[in-house]
Image (cartoon, rainbow, N blue to C red; front, side, top):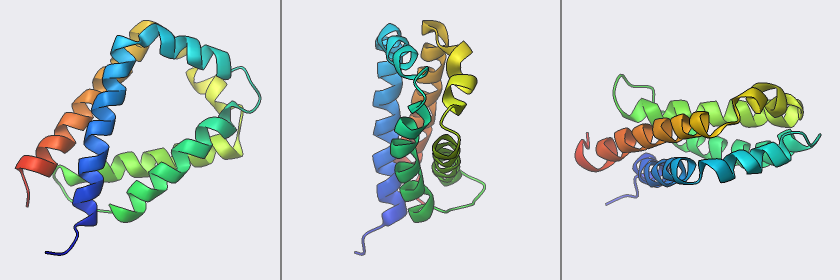
Amino acid sequence: MPFDVPLFVERFLAPLLIIVGLSHIIAARQWVAFFNEILPKPWAGLAIGMFTLPLGLAIAISHNIWVPHFPVVTTIIGWGMSIKGALYLLIPGLPARVAGKLMNPATMMIGGLIAIVLGVVILIGAYFLLM
């Protein structure tokens, strides 16, 4: 049986989103403190982009599946992370302008909930709706 790279990416991304989402809910104040510490720095975009762009590109390149069902969620996340990472690397002050006003525990929890929902959608598709 050949190794299914797109399926591997989905099975990698789903628990990642769920765990990070749970962390954003459970430790919302700590996430806010973390971002409030780094966002004012002139290098914030470089730091965030260094992590976001490589992971996004790895997802987008290995999972470039544009179909009208669940796998497209992973593809959209990958391309979104790639675009975000590239923008943050090219415009290092952008994160402070984009996220600065959103840094509070309530919005952090909403973001966590969105990540969990996306993770569960990908998880269900990757484990139970194999096509």
